[in-house]
Length: 145
Image 1 (cartoon, rainbow, N blue to C red):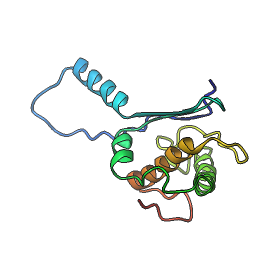
Image 2 (image 1 turned 90 degrees about the vertical axis):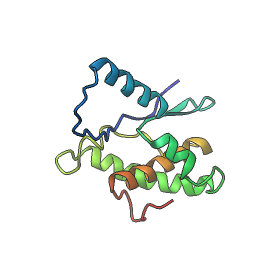
Image 3 (image 1 turned 60 degrees about the vertical axis):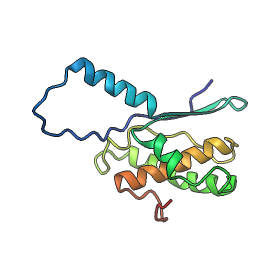
Image 4 (image 1 turned 135 degrees about the vertical axis):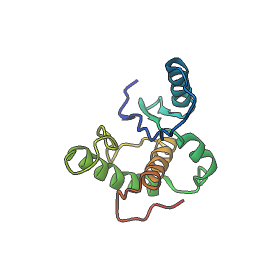
């Protein structure tokens, strides 16, 4: 299966002052558990496309805050995703201007390919989550839920 869209871990961990120390092994285990619980994988096996999103908090946000599946039409999602992907990819190729820790790699999303509803729905919601969480604006629309 081809992985055409792969969004890497974007960490936003806050480290606070603490008088107790946690072992490195416990921290690594906690980080791995966080990654597993915050990993969303979407695939369309017929078309051989897959999205893997590893983002702390995205999975719970998707379940609790996002509009339910079916709320948007697939055409609406495709149109918005094209705008967001184009802006995302523009920012990836300009690391001197945009934070390279936020925009790590390009997304291969092309118009004219039917990725299916689920892929478009979760990609769209990731962009909304990303914009709200990191106070970014990827298009002319104000990101809202």
